[in-house]
Amino acid sequence: MYLIVGLGNPEPEYSQTRHNMGFDTVNLIAKKYDIKVDKKDFDGLLGKGKIEGEDVIILKPQTFMNESGTSIIQVKNYYKIPTENIIVIYDDIDLPVADVKLRKKGGAGTHNGMRSVIAELGTTEFPHVRVGTGQPEFKELLIPYVIGPMSDEQYDELKPAIEKAAESVPAIIKDGIDKAMNLFN
Image (cartoon, rainbow, N blue to C red; front, side, top):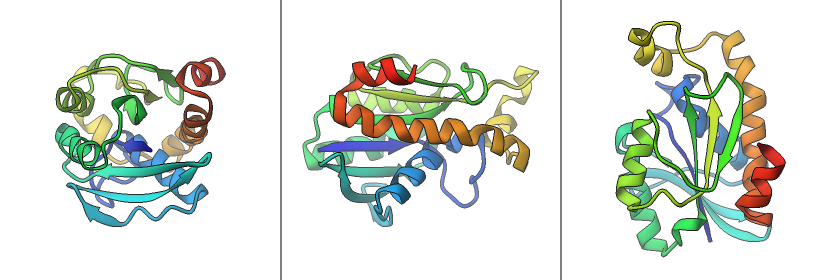
């Protein structure tokens, strides 16, 4: 079983924000595989289905970004999901706009949601799917940049990255993170 997690802040208030690239990606995956992500449990919204013949749970933590790990650890423990089968998708200001990078493991960087995930899981060794959002011109504008609404044009610029990130998840499940990294990085 795989746990596919999109990081974000509760919708609809934070829809179409840079910080919700994880939610947008899992929403696209859920739509493609006809998985309804509407069950409220474990401090999140989740849905069960199959991707590449494997049982999956798609999770959107509803704890706000900085406490995302609390929802993930509850699902992991309840369903006894191995850490290496947890795929976490999130926005990354340290990548250029619309760039997508997969990693087999890694630290949180500047991402507070990933800090929470790593703290709760007690490891950095799980697949990361990072969607680049770029940075604001001035560091003081970082918070409004990541949680403020984007224009339609700004959001359209990120759509190809959301699609690419969504395509990477079945590849990770089918062929493993190493092969997926070779295909998508």
